[in-house]
Amino acid sequence: MTYRMLGSSGVKVYPLCLGTMNFGNDGWGCDEDTSVAILNRYLDRGGNFVDTANVYSGGRSEEILGRALEGRRDDVVLATKGYFPLGPDPNRTGNSRRNLRRSVEDSLRRLRTDRIDLYQLHIWDPLTPIEETLGVLDDMVHEGLIHYLGCCNFTAWQIALAQERADQNGLERFVTVQPQYNLLCRDIEIEIMGVADYYDMGILPWSPLAFGLLSGKYDRASHTGPGGARMNDPHENDVMAKWKQRTFTDDTFDVIDLLKVDAERLGTTPVALSLRWLLEQPAVASPIVGPRTVEQLDQNLDAAELEVDTDTLDRLDAATVPYETYLDFMQAGYLSRRTEDLD
Image (cartoon, rainbow, N blue to C red; front, side, top):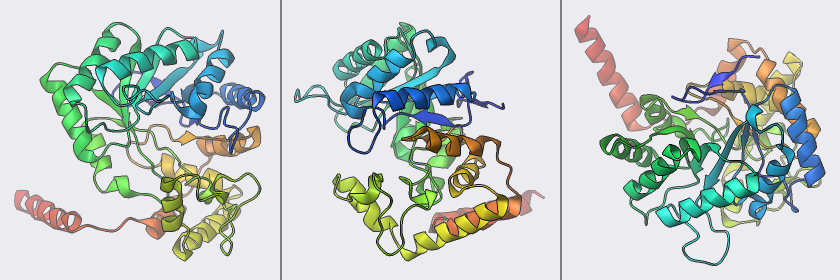
């Protein structure tokens, strides 16, 4: 099995990370027995990278992992996150020194471990100075509670500011960024991918199957999937409702139809082909898959060994390429002229 480097760190991770937001979720997730079965199959197939967060299932995801990983903790690169509230206390949210210290201690307790391999800020905190945030994270790295740092859902300027402040103050940098990225959501290619490359950060795409849409299981006419499908209920929260309204379009289903045709021709599934396309993108370290069943996990992991011809990847790329900004063609033209001048 070929492993990948976790950004600028020296850690090697499996090409697909096991996301555990489904673990212990009574709505659209899976119970503890199924969660443990998924984890065991992932480890048996060579996986070594597991991602969770303190808020997943109100802390139950971390608790399930803590019990399931007893005796195998050293075999896993374990990632979790902090920011979102776990209770009514107004100081139990955000990226303040007070909240992050408590969040890490609580995660360590639930995970039954003495260290977190990758600790990620779940989102930018506009109320806390980034120097305060980086300072407490740096403290916990040097105390051995955390090995590496990452961020999620940051804009390009927020990533750059954090990395520069870290350098200026001699603090630990982020080695990864975790944004949404898939064939139907390629916004990060406009700026985030460039800044991640500049700072040598590994990209850990979440929702690589666009909340299951790229599996091909949703109907074009009714916009519904099989029983239990997460996107059957667009009112779960405002973010999901807005995402579904923006994404469930004829253009989207045209892409899915193309994906199905190419997958059938290659003797694979739309799931594996979608993930394979993602694995071929620059700076992508390990897409985060979130199966609800062992069968779904197996389909996901097939992507790690799938070989796809360049023409197929190019066809999918052309069908979903994000819009071109004026800076894209303006700077490209300038850079090409500068190259000609140098010649």
